[in-house]
Length: 123
Image 1 (cartoon, helix red, strand yellow):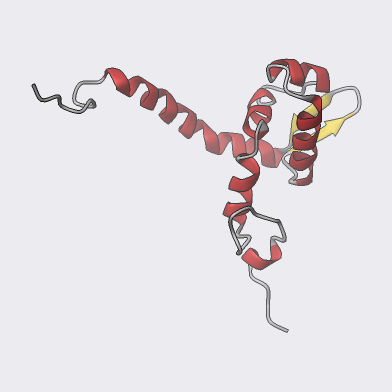
Image 2: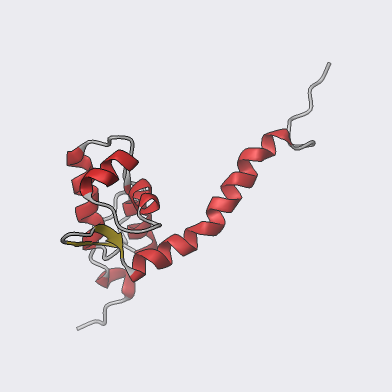
């Protein structure tokens, strides 16, 4: 019996990928509507389903619950009675990995005003 690689043992369905590599599975999960927003809103602590929905600009309860179920299945979010939804240690590690990207996005968004970033106009 051949040994399974990490790619094959991940066992997650990945849109647009036949390999199911862990990075592809993660990017697929994070690319789903509201997934990143949910993680971002939970970064400072647990929220109830209602508070999370408000924080997510009144996202559809059906979609929100589907994403929470996916995040729980991925071990990034957990639910505790009386506390609400919260990121797990693994989820906190993911958020920490995204913080440099958050800083880059701010710099990138401000790049519109930087000299030399605009195409030269002929005239």
